[in-house]
Length: 203
Image 1: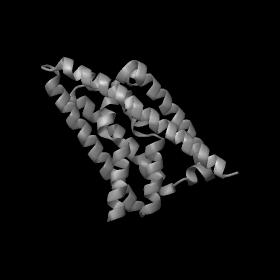
Image 2: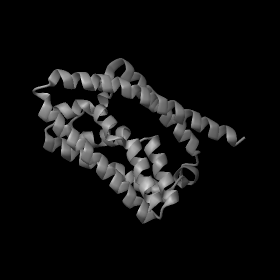
Image 3: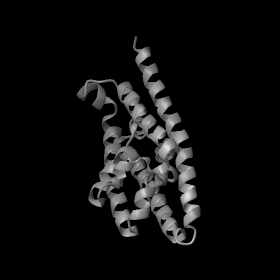
């Protein structure tokens, strides 16, 4: 039970809905609650399926199927998130311009790279190593559901407060977005260094 709780907490910490809502600020403003809910649920279903797949197959996908080292994925993923973090520093939350696409395509854009990233995939592999396949998928599902629920609640709070405190909301997203860049950039560098150390240890 302890490992189960730790697994849920690990993935939920990496998902962090309070950071994700900053990524999604543009579509939070544009979509109605119903549209946002449908898009977010589809994105969550995509992300949850990918997490469960990696929890079951582990790093075999990289070593056996793709014939590459997982460290390579960590380095590349770290570089991608480092670029996103740098854009956040200069542009704020609107750095993710790919989320300006049509609503029917938003689910995929949210799933990757907002929900699905090197960190969450690594966590899914770790969860799969600690728990049985079915139990690991249940733990992953709970973490995803909790994350999506909090994001939806934050969307409703935004819509409720936006009309009366629009300037305050704008300042929050602007400041939070740039502060998030520090976290994103730090995690990105850590992932790059972890991948490099893994490669060095092989020689």
